[in-house]
Length: 137
Image (cartoon, rainbow, N blue to C red):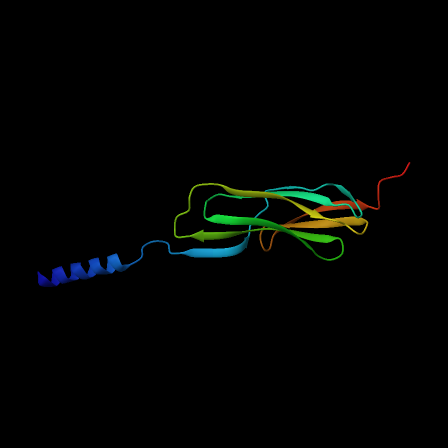
């Protein structure tokens, strides 16, 4: 009887000392998909080109969503959406969203390729045809 009681007490002590939760998880600057993008078909040299972007994540563990447009090679740009994720095992059931208008000013005529990164290895491309100016009459 004493042995059984000691075993039960030991098992109880081990179970109560274990952290059965999911633990703390924290990530910063995770690439998240861009849900919506609006890219103009045309642009003009030395005039701003505006690109609308938006995204949403499905729980409250996401925060600090931000967008960036980064110049690449000549007439190429990369657009990223990144966010932070922090959880102690449970995430509130809310939508976290953000949108922005990103701007670049082309200095060369021709096709400008905009690469939208959906994950670190998956992207979608769009093109803005930039001219030297409006047609003269």
